[in-house]
Image (cartoon, rainbow, N blue to C red; front, side, top):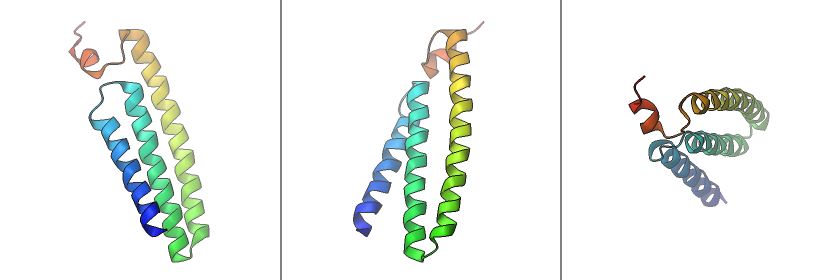
Amino acid sequence: MLIAIFTTVVLLYIIGFYYIIITRNLIRILIGLEVLAKGVTLLLIYVGKLTGQMATAQSMVITLIIIEVVVMATAAGIIIGIFQHTNTLDVTKIFSEKE
């Protein structure tokens, strides 16, 4: 069981970092952040179960989810504004435009 959850967390981290580092699309970067946060959430829950401190782990996960929702909503709003202004979501095109 430990190996399965650890493998899942590592895969979520790899997928999240891949989307953040490799891709140039802002929506994919946002999805990568979301996947990375889900890996952290899973890790917190499992560590709480291993240490016997589920109440602490649950409160940390709830706090993480609330912060995650606020960050994602703010980032989505910023991305929508960038798209309306530049008409693209490609990071290289956004930063190469000179006005």
